View (cartoon, rainbow, N blue to C red):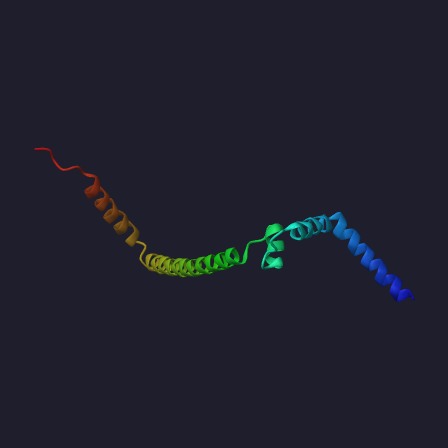
Length: 123
């Protein structure tokens, strides 16, 4: 007899939880809405999902495809980022082996910038 009482107590606690969180009220409203439909939808489950705020099957499939595309783009960008980091590390290691190279690089960069920003002479 004790087992049955524990089981009933668990059921009652769960029912109170569903009621206090608004689940029973929401489900009741959706089921009443479905009941009141003159033309019953072909998929009662999809009707309920939509009424509860979920995407339709076609919307879900579209979101899945978009997610897949975004995952591919993310993976490509991540690989490019990692490649750029490797290149940067390679440049840093080359630069650290030749400390005089910094002065030469700066002078070359300054020469390039000067050439690019110097206006042509007016005639």
